[in-house]
Image (cartoon, rainbow, N blue to C red; front, top):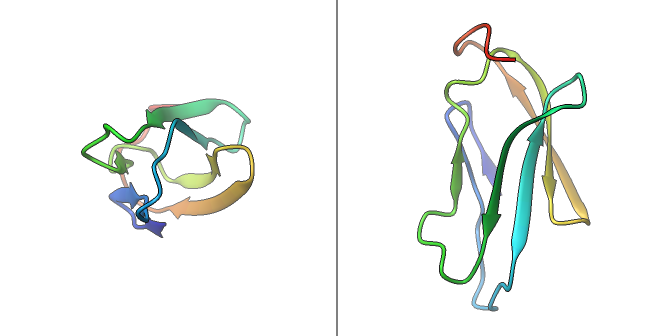
Length: 78
């Protein structure tokens, strides 16, 4: 996974993915973005450019957690 201030990219290997849910959760515990990736998915990224500044948890499936400390961006979306 590559996390920037604009996008989150998932790097997939050659293994087929049946269904991979990804959620971005704000510091208040609410889901602010979510997407389910499958083998048919062409764009393996989430656009986080419009999220307000803050700390976010990124849940990938049920096993992996990453973090995003967003700076700048649009205010007032949460």
